[in-house]
Image (cartoon, rainbow, N blue to C red; front, side):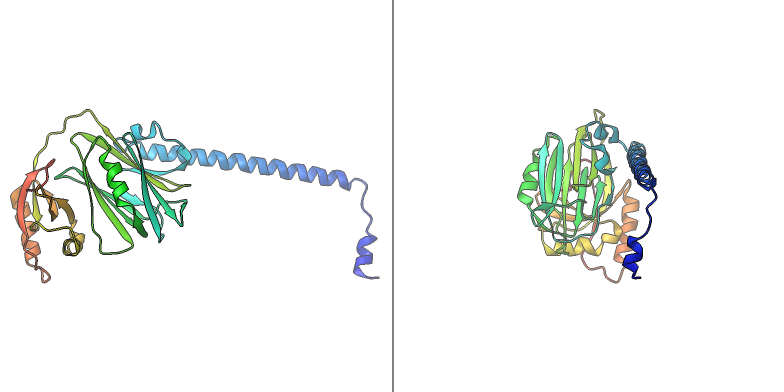
Length: 283
């Protein structure tokens, strides 16, 4: 007798049909319970994210009109996030005091933001955005959208030697609060600005800085040389740019920092100590 013949001669118990139906019903019930647990876990995770980020200044205001709370990855004022990628194009959209930075590949919006960092510095009050894995940026659109935000003073590119990275600087007006939110599915970054209603007293700061330079490769190379020292590029009052390090409360600390630079073997570009107000650009 063949195996097929044995299979066909197996007696099927009369009650087996009911057993199968009961098993199927139990499977459906278990699936429903798993879905309920998963949804509850997602809600708990979202609430946890809100609780963690709610201690960041300005976050409560940022969360008050978040469109889909489940899509929020993080809300921050400095730091970074995103995922490693390449070939991303960047576009922007603006609404009132909000800027959305959108990311696409081959015309399709991607599910997560590319790797990015956000830094905040004074002298002047500014945000420094850097995105990696990005090949295309509609900078004219970005500049137009950002300058139309009522709490923005200026915006300019931050030239980076890596052709898969882009950067730009957003100078903020006085007494402006901000938050940067990372979303996924789709992936985008949202910058929210608002007047916090508090008057911040400007104060004098001391920096180690380079001479004025035109925007270009030489400026980018100098900024990269001192990147480990917290260098950043600032636009001067005459429209040129300078590389600055530090934001010291007194000249002595700045002079000490300068001495450390001049003692290095790779020191070449002349640096000097300068000072200006925390809400102003260098002369």
